Length: 400
Image (cartoon, rainbow, N blue to C red; front, side, top):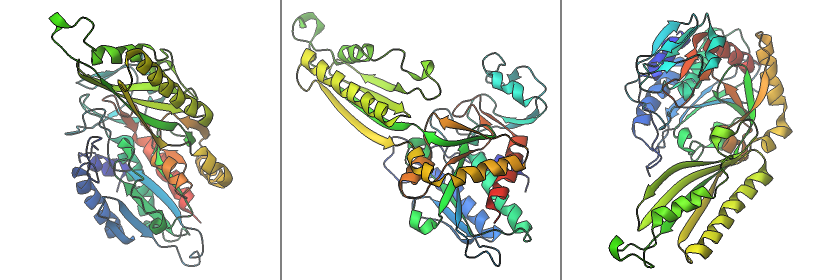
């Protein structure tokens, strides 16, 4: 099957995860695609291809004769899409990009705002209609892994060890590794195929934590409020005003960490804030958490004990610590890219992946690109040529 046909089929499924859900997976609709993927792997001939009760899809391609003793290598992607932009009723279009702005209908990808598109002149791009995300994050990764496995099956003369395939739900809400059975997966190491542009390789990611801050106020009729009212919404605004204004995503890049306000709501009686903390450096990451804790303690001295209630929860850590003892898997990825005329570059992830948590669960798991651009956005697109290249790279990695 052509890579673009497989990908277009996958994006027809609505699989957005739900960060407010308490179920596993967070949205039942992910299981619809999961069942489809499990059946596809089974039809290819993978052993024990199935979707488990938590919505995880697994399958194993047996080693070719004489290579049964080789280490099992894993390839992982996620089926859910981000809740950051509309994800249902995706209407993808394939265009041959000749340069200039791309009018999607619902919005425009402009060269001025998205100069990256200039790199794709002469290539075939899959774009949205400008009202939804596309879903290349990470259905492109799923399509590339499946197409590479299918290629190996069609070419039995290519030797390879046992290959494990794993497709996870709920990666976009930080839960993709929660119920991943590393022992059952059986791989010595693995790659997530969940990155951006080719030929980027990622084995460093943010240390991440979530913040929930609740402010308890005292409400009373505003006509009688003098020296009595404690407006929770205003107190929360005061807290936000004391955060470092330059240390936010809009003003940082590369290895620079940040505080990111994700949501704020409330009234005079009660107000709540959601925030995430990110930093590649573990020491700086811990210092950022201490800064928030100290600020909350100060606010309670100003407004009264227990006015501000703070919960900080670590989400994941920088996988670099777990990858460094296994740098041969990075060397292998670089060699596979070079074999196909690419000049690989290692870049830090300004986010996290399933691989970050899996690396700390005993499965070293760096991240490979999919070829997608502008993830989590109605301006998302992917190059068919990039996807085709990644299939070749994955086949190279799968070879014995």
